[in-house]
Each structure stands twice: as structure tokens, then as C-alpha cells.
Length: 179
Image (cartoon, rainbow, N blue to C red; front, side):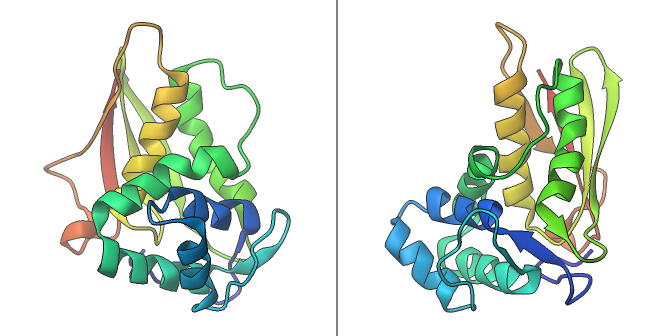
């Protein structure tokens, strides 16, 4: 999927997810709400639904003005606000549950996916086939990994260097996760 382009105008994102922008922007909630409002998302509330394209337009503005570190910070906040399945027992289950959470927070048409594949002990990959920026996805994956890491481990999330990336015009991004 192309970054910042919804696959369908019918796709919506819930208010819980939108509020992660308000929580993740370092310059304050009021300014975050102004950016969202400038794209037609006013007063986001849990349980409300908004056109995904408007949400992606706000992301595009944030990416253009504040850069990749801010997108990463927003991704880190997604599990704090968005709906997630209850109680994955392992790192592998938690990384696989990102796709379930994605589907809980989006509706109305083709949204893409997050596909987890175990590669070995304490290693896997997540293929992100969605319209969100790569740095946002990296933050989301890192947040999930940090919450579900085994005691004494330090998760790392890096782009697979030899696989397609949306940063270089690809349709997907693939992240290697180690812990």
C-alpha cells in the first residue's frame, strides 16, 4: 500500500487510535488537536469513527513538519490508546496480535495488515502492508515488544535491509524483531 493513501474512502479509524496522536506529539495536546482539526478531525473521542484518509492527511503533515522521530513517538503511544486483544502470553503471540488490534481499530474496507513470522528463538519479523509511515510502524512494534518482552531481554526493531521498504518506494515494510 502507498504511504498516506487509504485503500478506500470508506475505511475509518476509531477515536481511540486518533487520540494516540494527541498523546504522542511532544509539542502538546492543543497543537495536536489543531493539526487534526485542520484535516477534518475535530474533538476525537473514544468510540467515534473518522475517515482514515483524513487521519493519514494529518500524518502526512506531521511527517513533513516534525519528522520521523515524532512518527515513531506516536507509534509508541498506540497501545496506550487503541483497542488491543486481551492477554497475549508470549512475545510471539503479542507481535501476531498487532494485526488483530489493527482490525479492531479500523473498519469499512481494505486496510492492509501486519503479518508476524517467527524466525527462531527470540527472533521474528513483522511485514507491514498498510498506508502508515514506516517510523510509525516501528514505534508500534517496539511498544508491543517492550510490553511483552521476557524478563532480562532488550527488544530491537529494525528494517530488514534487503527487503522492500515504503521508505524507498516499496509497498510494504518488513521489520526484524529480536529480544
